[in-house]
Length: 257
Image 1 (cartoon, rainbow, N blue to C red):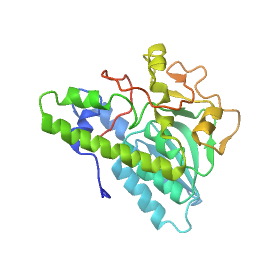
Image 2 (cartoon, helix red, strand yellow):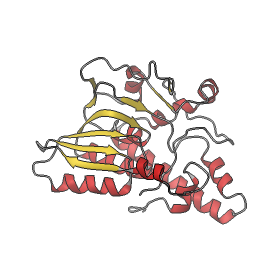
Image 3 (cartoon, helix red, strand yellow):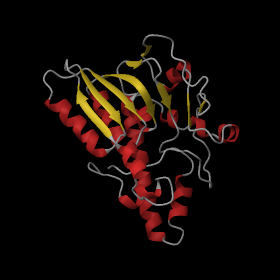
């Protein structure tokens, strides 16, 4: 059992944008996140990067709240896969609604949005997927990071395999197809859209993955139409083939804090 597993720093560094894990002001700004309870007590409000300390705060706020909020309002550029699943598990087990009031990208789109009982897309909201534990270049990333250290490669592979199982168990729990995270990484899509930040789906394709009860607030949701940084992928029934090259802009672990 790995009940309190967290990806270790070497693997986190590996799956950050290479090279290295250097801190700088831009990185600090991007990592900021806040979580609060709305003044009426009905909403848990999460704004910013998905990381361990802020998810810990969210879980503690929910536990202490009386009465309990019934909705998670969130805008997030993503972050830690592990902690995204932790927050998504809270949303699913407590049957919270999820409202997207800005961007919901990466681990937010992978694990938090699909876990909501009802899912609300506010005007100008945006969903963005760009990978997960089924993406085809994990072994290539590990090989690049540890070309001459077989033991380090083995440790990284073991941690990667555990995270794949952790992600798969979460998606089984919420009844959503994990291929949601990677269909846009099939070679045809990568060749057609090599420089985009990620992909989204039509509401019809989201329903095919098992992501249902999506509601538009204020107007019809236009998704990625007119946004050249995102392309519209479609439903797939198999994972992308294993790749020996690194995928541009693919999801990766990030430092917790």
